[in-house]
Image (cartoon, rainbow, N blue to C red; front, side, top):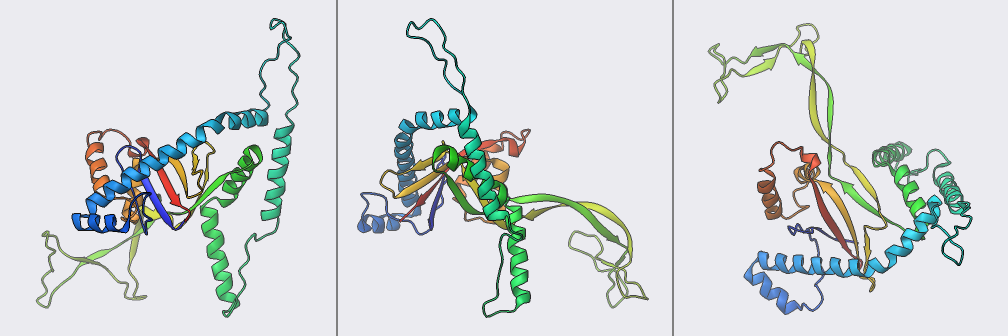
Length: 310
């Protein structure tokens, strides 16, 4: 899954790394596209991605009814039964054994993975025990931020219900708004050699914190609450819903259809500008500018992510 293709089903937001050639495209065709420009190559890639997603979606639909039957068994739902005359209802007593069995499997898997503290241990190999302990602390902290225990439990439950599940391991490029206290220092203007204050380009005097004559540290006169955007900088584990998982019958591609808010997309682009095509982001930005009164996190965009297993 080294190659990731991310796309908006409508506007053609596609991300590509080391891309494999779409079916029916030769190296000569690729060379000609390189000469005509990058836009042509992206248009071909977008068309191939949408066609591939539609093909995998059509392949999945015949199995949706069977998956719905498995889920109804899990929650203990059963159709109404009638006698052969189709008038007299039969007894509809149903014991939800699948629910008990699945929950037992989920709890046993949880105990097997997380029954020992810590669940992940880092041992030094050519390093010091202190460096190994620091790496273990970083790994456990990042995985806790990624809610890995919750995601593994969700995946185990889906596997117990349907017999298979998909989980996507990605890097979380989103940001969180953190509000905390920030010290306020006593300021003084910066003077030049003539004893005159140095002015900034905007016409205001340049200021520096005043240092204490005793400790040599800035003099703090108070605190103020400041909100900052802090990158999450942790893995992102996403259990793929069984109805959003698209699998190629030939075993070449796997796709995940999901929804993402416009605010989250903007925060991702701010941390990594190579996630999406710049022209697609510019087009969405111009469209979203018409809805200034709406919350950016309330605008949901349907997207698809396609992996090449080869």
